[in-house]
Image 1: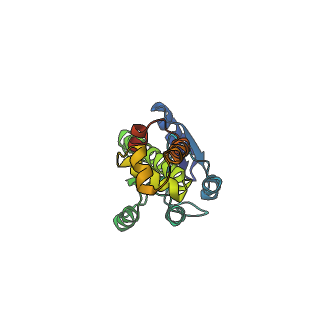
Image 2 (image 1 turned 120 degrees about the horizontal axis):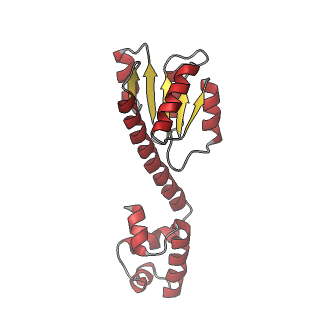
Image 3 (image 1 turned 180 degrees about the horizontal axis):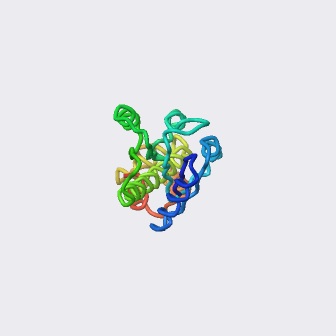
Length: 195
């Protein structure tokens, strides 16, 4: 989902149309506070999110919005592309150093902007998938993590049981729990997920 945060209706409409021409779903926000309410809800698109953020807005400027995203650790999950008609090089350099995805001055090249939006969506999708894997890993018990490490090392159940001083049946139960929690069916799939 592309999130367009700009106080000018004509800009929001133009960018929404441009996104639809590339089959990119978009939603727009007149005020930064409305976008931040979306962020608070945490209902991110599993296919990725990208933010086109105007620098100058009346209620809260784009840099302040970006700072809130950065403080929440969301700049990978919500790549921000700044848009400005009043850009200055030091501000662009500063935001890019702090994790902004890109910075475009108005008027911009439509195709270049949409290419970067698609790259941002892809980056977000990967960040989302990575966060989901880490969340699943966090559900594993200490013993399941030990079994997981030995499975990833390519060790058979009997060897795992010997190394951990537990029965082979216990290893099989842990292995089943690990596969269930990690949402995989095979050790190969598990290794691919965690590479």
